[in-house]
Length: 404
Image 1 (cartoon, rainbow, N blue to C red):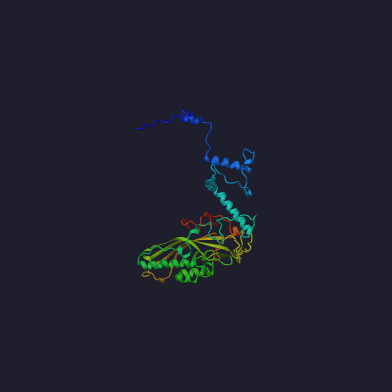
Image 2: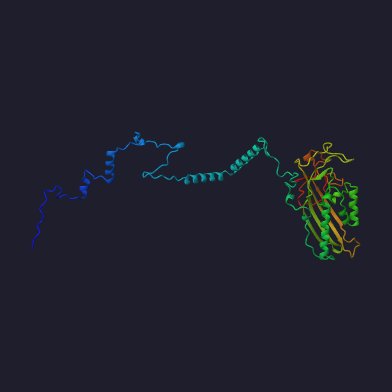
């Protein structure tokens, strides 16, 4: 059987006994080039590479070339990728700072806005275009034609007939509930005709109100209207102004008060009314001038006041408080005129009216605001004409008002 012999030994191999371990690799002096390196080496032998301009610079830290408009190229990272700039964060920081500053300076921001708006109006030639015009200095509580109730408690009061609220009716004595309701409504209508009706206020004779009174009360009022005196003046019954001396700036009359009723025993029913009426007026052409046969009084002869509607002249208010009692007799025991009002008692307090009465008209005191003479020094007590609890009496002297 043939036997295979070992092959002949190789000549002495210089690598015999060589161990390709980690020490051998680290100690290698020559490293094999990569395939791309060998390819580029062969190519550069045939066609040497041309130096690029920016690489030819000797500056160790060359500046990047500028683009058009002077902008630098977008930055790149070491791997050649463009770096993305986070622009949202700085924007949010700026916006947050602006909001915080605005919140801490609201007043200054508002002033800046108003100044800017005024400047725009001035450049456009609109209202207030004059840059040197002084700001308005009118007191917001000063009554004017446009705001006749400014600074007065009456500003929040109801107006006219709506202010005269009737109490809930109920049967009293010989009068049943429906009859009492009718009598209360009759009293209310009389108060409207004598204190709220524009025709009466402007000086006309209140014929409808006279027709509601019984014979005795009507005769007294007619006499006071026809021949007024200091002791018998129609203004103790009703409110009216001489249009030559005082002109209402509005037909609105502010009012506040109460109406109550009670049994008057065998006599029947008594209705009590206590109301404050407030009027806004401007001076008429003869305001302050003495009436025929009457001295002007005060510091000198007053002159008529020139006044133009809409010129912003301050107005005056007259505050009239009236307490009036109406008696309705039992028709079974007394001979009465059914459906007529019997004025049993009345008192009137005229606030901001000249002290010398007797003309048959309310005469608003315009002396302070319009430079007119006064008729009598104010020597009486200081009172609040809006106080509903103040007792009315026949005090002597010309009083002073704490407010108008």
